[in-house]
Image (cartoon, rainbow, N blue to C red; front, side, top):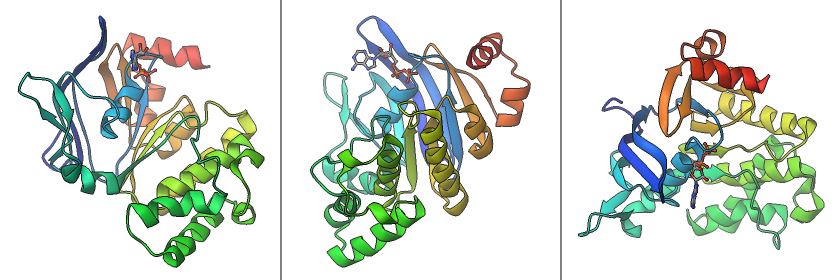
Length: 256
Ligand code: ADP
């Protein structure tokens, strides 16, 4: 963690009941960096992304984005999300794509993508539509702008979700196992779109994935999690080809 980091976790711990999910975790992510989080199921990876969206609170520790604290301490010592007014600038720059797309089912594709620019950024309908059309073209769905989500394949829905996330021109994009609900072929389409995003933008990416080839292609750094701690952190070529930790070796073998 350095002062220049855009995202910092400092001494963050979280338990659900007796289950220790994050254990005094500290790390930082620089602006524009692409970081992949790997590790066994239940090791706390999704919890980290959810905390950045203030969907889950830490028990203790500090999380900042561009120096802004995401949580504030109550008098009894518990942490709660900072005031909405304080979070407004963070909400405009951070966005998350979920495993289960979560499109608005009652809105056509175009409207799914224009909703946040109009309501969060205050763009006019015309500006938002122009941006949405550009993004839908980028994800290969220019011909589906009038479709309802239910009429799209899972891979197409996920590509709409990516266009929707990018519509606010985020500085930070959080990706939570965005291909794990998809068949390999549809997953490949989605990963190709994300490779383009990585290439054509400077967005900071935090990515939880089991798609190791993709992680190798786009990441600057891979963090290996185990039991709520980072046990290994290295550029992908190093971590995948010469893992130092026995737990990392075992985890990578289990994916083959
Ligand atoms: P990962 O993404 O590495 O699979 P998660 O961050 O999703 O791990 O979950 C870490 C642990 O926290 C898991 O054991 C999970 O069951 C538990 N957990 C996550 N959310 C909740 C919750 N809302 N209530 C209780 N337990 C939870």
